[in-house]
Each structure stands twice: as structure tokens, then as C-alpha cells.
Length: 273
Image 1 (tube, rainbow, N blue to C red):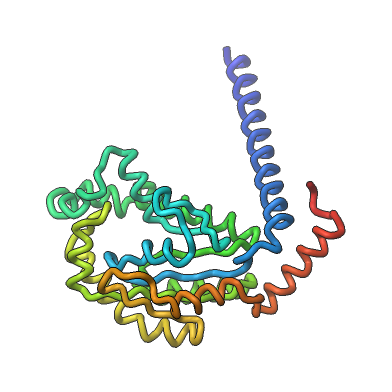
Image 2: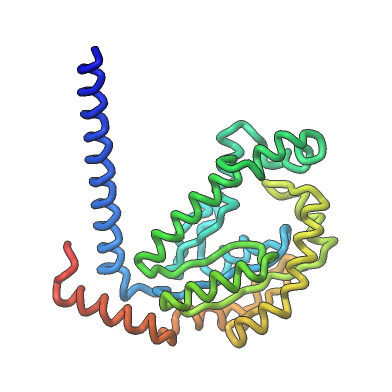
């Protein structure tokens, strides 16, 4: 029986190794295809950071500006950019575990243990959502695909670190700051799919506001404020500047070199088809 168990375990280990190798090959193939097919796509090596407190309507603003399907909340925009948003994965994880996202505020107030399991525990729903989104972003970066990084912007150093990394990889970067009053943010929060506790929303809103000036200094001319206190069509002039950034030729010299090399490989048929 021991021999049978040993042989069985060896076969299983070998099978797992084979599967992992195959998955690695598939991933490599997909990345090569992205480089070959995507190097001349619009939005290549462009990264747009969305910032704004909870209830500001920044995700809706991103949908309007970049052409993301509102019904599907697709990760793919007509502008060629890919949306990276851990909130979508978090809400999906909550529903998968039988938790209504609208109950988050109540859970935080009434069930501290469950709240910690959801939002703080390693391997919990929030943690898994972040891990999944990080893998998604890493995959996009491998092909230098254009991205919309949809976060709140309450952590300035985190955004700065992401911006620096992106530019070292060859990306041009931009920020769209969606602004609204705290009163309006609180009102909209109650109508969101995922209702946040009032104290969490307020602290996040204040942190984002404190970072507004810092972000403007960090991104310079590649920075646009959208006032969304009152729901209305996106300002056409602001939208024009943002789309001009997405569609304009690359300025980052590292990115230009990467594109030239990718085109050379494509034209020489050195990337597998």
C-alpha cells in the first residue's frame, strides 16, 4: 500500500508539474500575442489614474470618458484601455459568499468579527479581490497595454509609487480627479451597490481632498479635475484633453524604445504566431 501511495503521489506531482508548465506556456503565448497584435493599438503604454472619494461617481465618469459598457462594467474600453478596479472583484466576492454589498455599513457597526474577516483578514474577500486585481494588472503590464487604474486616491505615496513604476516601464501617465462635496458623497453612498460605513467614507473623502494639490503637482499638465457635485454630461473640453492624451504619440522614451523593438519583432516574424 505504501508503494501504491508513493507511486500515486509521484504521478499526481508529475501531473501538477505538467499542468503548471502548460499554463506557463499558455501565459507566455498570450503575452506574445498581445505584443504582436496590440503594439499598434490605441492606448498602448498609456496609464490613466482615476481619483476621487467614495460616492464621487468616478467609476461612472470613467465609463463615460473611456467608453466602458455601463451594463457589463466590462474591463475593456472602446478607447483601447483596460479597466483595473478591485472594487468589482470585491463586490463579486461578497455576492459569491452570500453577502449583500449594501449590508457592509450594517456589518461594520454590528458584527466586528465578520467585518474583520471580510476586510482585514489575509485570504479574506477584500484581500483576494486585491490579489486578483494585481494579477490582472501584471498581465496587462506584460503586454504594455493601456490601463485605467480606478482607485480612490486616498494614499498619495501608493499612487506616486505606481506612477513611478509605470513610467519606468515606458508608460505615459495621467490623472483624472473626480470631485464632489462630502454631503453629496454621503447621499450617493446610500444608493450605491456597496454602501460604506459613514465614518469610513468621511475619512476617505478627507484624505483624497488633502491629496488634491499633491496630485496636481505630481502629474503637472497631465491632470484634469472633473466636478461631479451635480450629475451632468462630462465637460466636453475636459474630455477632449483626456482623449487627446490617450490618442497622442508616446512621449516616454523607454516606451518608444519598447514599441520599436516590438514592431521589429512583429515585422521580422520573430514572435510566434
